[in-house]
Length: 335
Image (cartoon, rainbow, N blue to C red; front, side):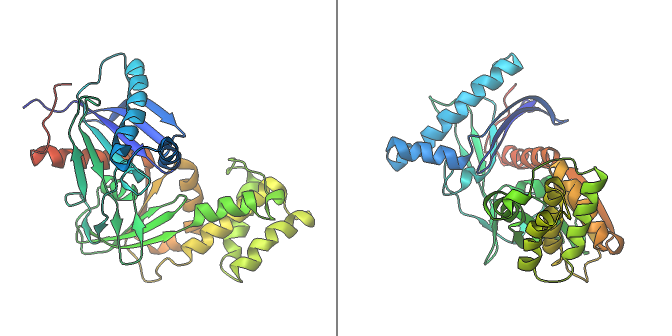
């Protein structure tokens, strides 16, 4: 059997779509296609067509095929036959095909995640390996389970923590090679609502300059405020910071960020001393690194290792794909 030299990585979230041609074994990204055509927008488009449920998968595959055509142009070569690994919300109620969640615990190497192989068909000449999410009795995640696999957690008796910032931040405890506990925090979504839709919106100005001294100071003030008082009261201070000229609108942006991230991390177990893997987008990672230090968490845990979102997504998808090949579920094309 020929070794797999490339695969197609699809991270299809609620509001975003990312498709990459990935070279193996080094996981070099050869070409990338991005859009805002996430599952929510795609599902709405499908509903507007009035098509029957059995045509839903085909509708999503046509969207995917359009992006694949653009990717082929970038790559300058045909991609027919390459497997597509799809993670994220594509396996949800608004995705191409709903799959059941994998109940925790699940193996941190991805060997027992819930997947479904969709064979190539006349109108879509790529096998699709769809990866589902994971759940506890009262919590869920889709997409982050693949990123956890991509972190390469060691099999250890000591608990380890996967911390993934985002719209719905995830804290997952890993022990003995198993993900055993999960908590979701609506930090990013609450920040977006407060800064964009609430009475605080006029006092906040979005900016990405976290390294500016005044912005870093405001973020620090927000984290410190999270350690005392009530969140609902402290959030209102964003408005009075602006009314009384205590903080500028850009500074208030970082104050509110620090306040909410601080409240999220206030639930960090006081007796946890194991290693932490902080994985996600670079801008958020910087904020969380600072907050972890300010709250004294960095000093009491064994280590804080930072990994990028793309790296862990690709490594996790590649691991799940290799398992499917090892099990004989699909064969390795020559490409």
